[in-house]
Image 1 (cartoon, one colour):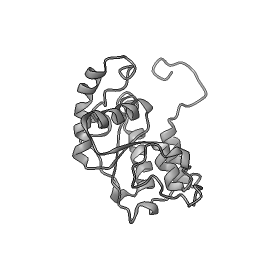
Image 2 (cartoon, rainbow, N blue to C red):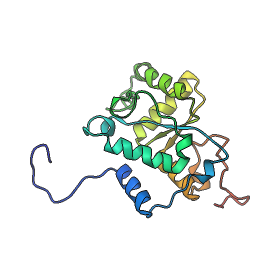
Image 3 (cartoon, rainbow, N blue to C red):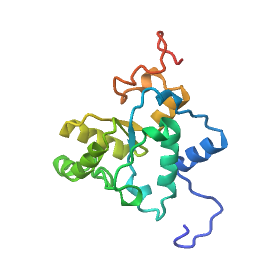
Image 4 (spheres, rainbow, N blue to C red):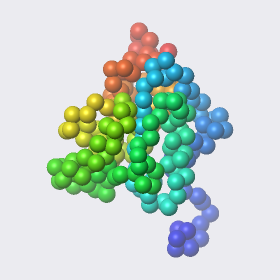
Length: 185
């Protein structure tokens, strides 16, 4: 709308920007203390649509702020290159659903290698296409990382991640924060 000078009275915001705003103003109460002793390492995937097409690094900077707030700055490992220069995972633009699985995986191998280079045990993705592609590449290429949606790790940091929302957690976190009856501690 801005590009074509279409008048409007509303503003588009990514949920990532809202998470960052809510954490900063105290509305979203997260805490990274859960990972102080565990020292589990996380990296983050910058989705192409928000990482490159917007023309600013604000959203991917907000993404890093959120991730560091929920896992601890000392437990975050950034990929290189990153932000607007990050490599595409190969799952967007219809590629994930397009039926050319081997080509998609071959294209995504660059991203897989980039993830492995970090040594992180978890890849946080705010985009579902990235999540599915990065998880598929892990299985296909024999990786040893886990892929999480951003909201999953936010809920973990709030102590509200339900038993039925732990599908993508590894054995190190699968039961973290649950009491014996399966509820939240």
